[in-house]
Image 1 (tube, rainbow, N blue to C red):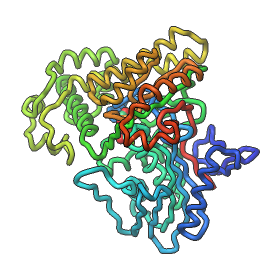
Image 2 (cartoon, rainbow, N blue to C red; image 1 turned 90 degrees about the vertical axis):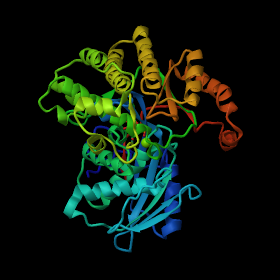
Image 3 (cartoon, rainbow, N blue to C red; image 1 turned 180 degrees about the vertical axis):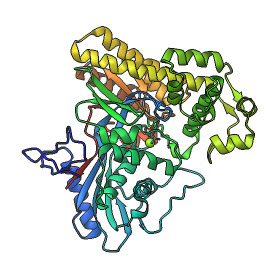
Length: 490
Ligand code: NG1
Ligand code: MG
């Protein structure tokens, strides 16, 4: 990995392909968290860490539940919410020691990296350290026979809200990948690191796309990113409209995706809808299709034609197993083997039409959103800004109605936003978690946050109120600006 720091030694990674090794000065915002973590590391292990890794959470502005269908998304890295690791060698060969500064919530963990396995619990979400092990496993698989486990001592500090759609899980997985890759002395660029990290998340049982890991590595201060996955991973910086301010508000309805089948069920429905339409299109290799984007490409369809195809061919609101087996000419056993996994084997009903319509329309909205941002960078236009807001609202409506991944608490936040004429949508996988809203100015954002505090947060149930009262809800509702992607700090 290359080393890069600007003249005064503060963090600077803009424009670099590799994860730069940085040194930080006290005036840097994350300096305090690093110091706290360094002290904790020394308390725990009796020595100083060798390097630090910082991986941000992210907020997706538009393009929800489309990445696993191959379509592009438009997220930005969070500037102030991240996971930081302090990493040092372990004198015991191949031994991993993992400690989290928040010991009450996250128990320490140890294992021998020569023989570790990732065993998912039958009920409930995976323990936090399993996400970490996924990252190590990703590097191990990447290296294959070259994998030589090296002992590591690690301390973790994190402030990305959990199970809130801000990608805390991917920040953890990606940080483990970066730390392990560095300890192994690997030469990987940001895209390779993102691809390895995206594959890792599968070990936790989520059949996700690669959005979170991509922006975690490709993010750059000052701009959002249009991230494409097809034909290969590509990130294009997108300047957000001048003066506008994005606010994140956490509904505090937690959704641990790995503890439920909702997310994977949507993935299954998209794959089945793809196969169904590929067969209808009479493609000779229709049995190979699992992603809408590949079908779109094979049939040279544009967005509107694809939508028409769905409207005409997927006419039922609910398909049964036998509908699908009959159409695809497969047995129930084949359906289970080819499409269902441990936590989707129970599925009896499939909403192919609704899911497919959402994905295709949402992918159209991403393209429009990017285009409008690019126009706005050249000349300001109230009309264009309004259009951006409309796209965000349409996205939310589609997620609520066609994708069925909102939550009553999220809807309450959206209702307050609507009343204030602020465009907002659920961000991340949904079923709870955060909304992202676009405000017309910093002042408008301040006013919006104030109203959310009095109309939403002040009415939280007592057990939640207790938890957030002293800090005035600032950690659950905040204005956010695009931050940098992953950093290696020496
Ligand atoms: P969240 O729930 O924010 O971690 C998930 C997926 C993304 C994407 C979004 C929905 C993981 C790690 N991330 O994000 O890839 O599909 O849902 O747009 O599962
Ligand atoms: Mg996640």
